[in-house]
Image 1 (cartoon, rainbow, N blue to C red):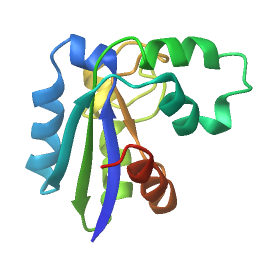
Image 2: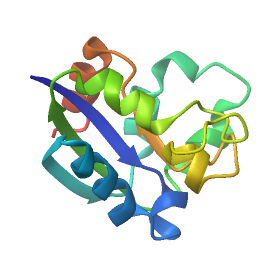
Image 3: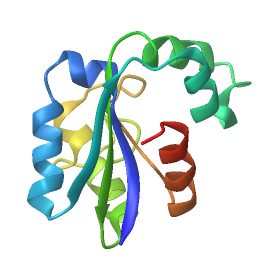
Length: 132
C-alpha cells in the first residue's frame, strides 16, 4: 500500500471544501489514515517547497500557504500517489479536466485548493516534514 500527503490549501479551507475533498477520496476507496489542521509556518513552507524557494513566484506562494489554516492528511491505498494526482488535476485550474478537484472547485492557477505529492519518494519526504 502506498501513502501520499495531501493538503487542502487556505483557499480550500476558507471556501469550505474540506469535506467534499475528503468525500471524493473516500468514495474512490482510498483510506484517510491521518488528518491535521494547522497553519503552515514559514520554515515548513520553505522545507516543503525547497525546490521553488529561489524562484520569483515563491514569496507570493509562501505568503498564500502560510496565510491561513490548511488541512493536511495522509491517504493510503494501492497506487495512492498516481490515483490522487489524477483526482486532483493539473496545477492550472483553467486547464484541469472537469471531474477533478481543481477542475470542479478552483478557478485559479496559484490558489488552486489542494496539494498532492508527485511521487512515492516525495510523499515519504513530505509526510515526514509534516510529522504526520
